[in-house]
Image (cartoon, rainbow, N blue to C red; front, side, top):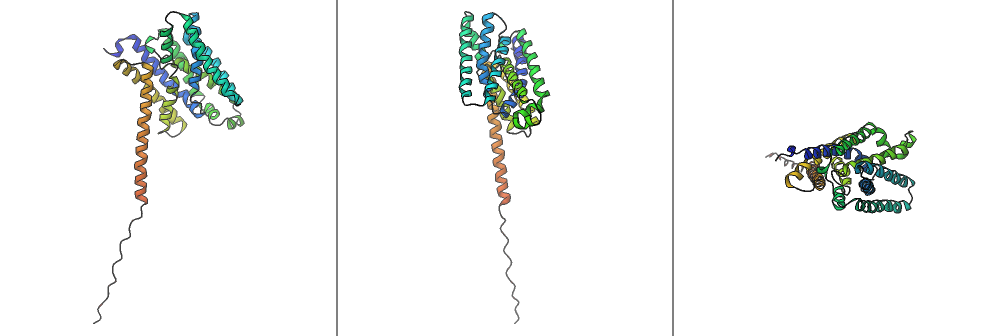
Length: 295
């Protein structure tokens, strides 16, 4: 049976493509700021939002966006202070988020275990039309801001002091990145799950960095790789009946390893060629002197 014969798989494919575009487009700023794992922390907080939505019988995606945005802003403000105690505060926020989420999901109904597994490890196949519309709208907003504000966001992510001296509103930009991270994590949890969402934001960027030169080229290639991993992951999960989120992440990591091996092989060949070119050529022996016979 074709994957396009089922409406829920078509919704899954559309949602995966949107997330495959959005996650790397924002993830490159997190990698640039060396905050690759913030997606995991925001994901823990988002689980509390999911629990709130299930408990109040509201859209879990919408409530997760609100709660995770508040948590992301708190994380950014703690990071900005730069104190040692900030690590402890972040740990309390992360662990409190996932613990509160598990507790609220448990209070939400009899199918709590199924609901919890869906949001922890992803299940685009159960995405409703309203959820898909929300994913598309929020994904378009994140993608538009990530691309439209690229120069300013890059400056603030690359060198905050320089951006501040240049007159850019660094705090506002940092808070914007935090909120966009929360939104991206929330819409991505339907595809790869809250425990794996950070991988789709980071792995395509890390793969693109190995072969692309320049920020714009890296960003574009990362988005292409994200879409490829998400789309092929949906198809492969359908064909071999595996978990959708895990399949997408495994394919993304496999792509990273293949590119890394290819780059290493090319470098080894170039290094060997350079050594051969630098090796001195043995001088030809001069001919023996010819002695004329005067006799």
